[in-house]
Length: 382
Figure 1: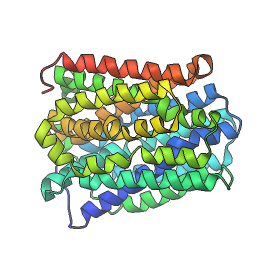
Figure 2: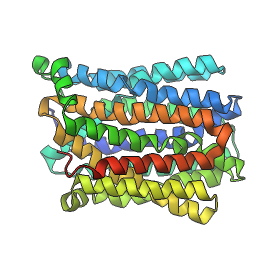
Figure 3: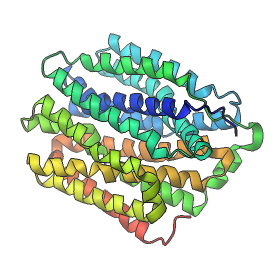
C-alpha cells in the first residue's frame, strides 16, 4: 500500500488527533449529562450510550475492509467525515429518546471508522518518516484535556446546549483537516473476506481481541456514568471537568515515551501492567469519592488507557499482514470499543439505579482482573 507522505503529514495527523479527542473531551464527560438534563432517564441514557459501541461492532470492520479492498484513492476516510458531520447536525432538531437514538446510530455508522482508518495511516507515516506514533498521537491527549476543562468551566455559567455546539464545531474542523491527511490506499483483490476470516481464527489474534474487549468493558461505568455520579455527590461541573482533564495528563509522558517503553518492555508486559492498574483504579472508584483518591485514580488513566492503547495499536500492526492494516485496526476497534463497550454500557445503564455506581466500579475491577488471568496464561501473544 502506498501513501503520499509530505513533511507536513505528521503535523496534520497531530492536529487530527487533537480535534478527534477534543471532541471526545466534550462527548464523554458531558453528552450523557446533556441527555440527563433534557429529560432522559438513566436507562435511556444507557441505551443511547450503548448505541455508539453497538454500531462500532460492525461499522469500523466494514469500512476498513472497503478501504483495503476497493479504495485505491484513499477517499473513504474523507467521505466518512462529511457524512458523520451532516448526520450529527440533526441532533439540533431532536429532543425525544427515539429521535436521538436513531441519529446517534446513523452518526456512529459513519464516524466510528474514521479513527482506525487514520490509525493505519499514522502507523504507515511512522514507519516511513521515523517519527514515533506516540509523538503524533499525543495531540489527542492535549485536545481531551483542554476541551474537557474548558467545557466544564463554561457549563457552570452557560446552557447545557453548548455541548452540542462544541461537538458540532469540532466535527466541522475535523472534516476540513481530513482532506490534508493522505489515507492509506487499498490494493484491490489481494484482501478478501476469506483471508480476513482466516486471520481472525488464529489463536494470537482472537485471544488478544478478547483481552482488549474485556479491558474496554471495564471502562464502561467510567465513560457512561462518572459525570452523573460525581454531580450526585455534589461536585460542580468545573470540578467534574477538571477531574476528566486530569485523567489524560499522565498520558502525555506515556505517549512521548511510547517508543522507548515498548522497545524496552515489549507489548505483552505493558498490556499486563495496564490491566493491573485498571484493577487498582476501578477499586478506588468503588471504595471512595474522596477528591484526593479520585485524583490519584484519574492519574492512573495514563496506564489503563495510555500504555494499553499504544501497546494494542502496535500489537495489531504486528499481528496482521501489510495488505490488511485498515482492516486490522478496524477489527481492534470493533472488538474493544464495539463489543466491549456496548455490553458494558448496557450492563451499567441497567444496573445503575439498582446497585449504584460503587458496585458497578467493583464489577469493572473484577472484569479487568479476569483479563489479567487470561493474559497471564499465555507466555507470548505472537
